[in-house]
Amino acid sequence: MRVLLFLCTLLLGSCATHEQGKSLYSTFLDYESNTSKSNIIQSSPSFFSKNLLNQLNLNSLEVAEQLLFKGYMAKKINNFEMILGTSGCLTINGFDSENMPISFNLKYIKSEQRWLIDEINVFFASDEADFSQTAKCPSEYNN
Amino acid sequence: MNMSRSEVKITVAKLLEVAYSKDKGLTTKIMAEKGRAKLVVDQTGKATLTGTLGSLSFSGAPVLNKIGVKIKRVTVNFENKGKMKVVYRATFNLEVISLTVMGDFNLEELIISCSGLLCQAARALKGRHKAYDMELQKIMGR
Image (tube, rainbow over all chains, first blue to last red; front, top):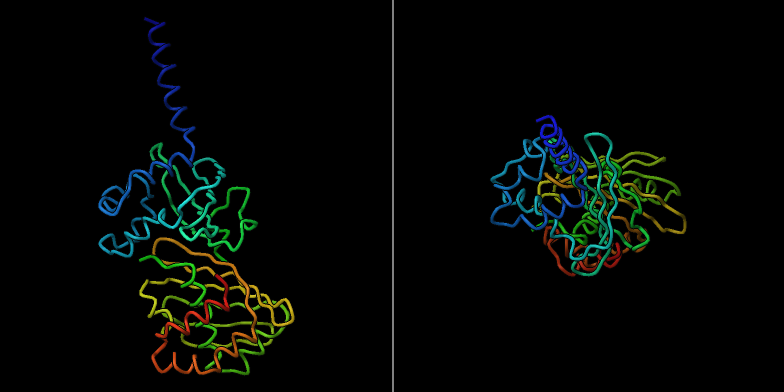
């Protein structure tokens, strides 16, 4: 019985560790592959924080389009992330549909063991040399 | 439709154009001075261009209203590197996302574009002039 309890504890512990260790980038990929024009409003609580959504008029087409900011990037090159406790930042570098360099700088917060997007910055770079090689938070782009 | 890279750049140029049309002397003085200047537009359209040689307030609402996207704040940091070359970083805070663009332009080229026929035609059409937008886009870079 004790062995069984120990194994159950170990199993639950490893699950929790796996969820906590989930990378911000894999969370972004979930958002990218599971959202579309037809479901963005309904699915938004799975990917965006309450703090972000509470300020928005979710009936607005403009808001829906901005929640689908993933459309700005056509090709991803690399990504960098930094986690500090219950918040973190993810930078994804890539190119837009005109092959111009572009980056996403996203702030995530952890809520009920899930990473949710809390702030979004889209950086239109002039050159690939402008790509950050470290994770940047959106606040770094708010002058 | 989300705001594009070129729309952000053209909007920066148009805001400078409005400042210039309000006070040519002060706008030129602020922008032509080597060093830093800053343009801030709030959600009501109240715009302020500030540099070491002064400050100019004007309404950016006519420019922002034409974009068709709700804008909470615009911040543009300029740095005049000398010889009329101005580098800038602009951030547009929209409802959900913020858009940041970096670029550079030749101040003289921008002022000349705004004194010419294209600029006058654009004003006559209340800023909706494709050729003028293309001219501004060329000046502000891709």
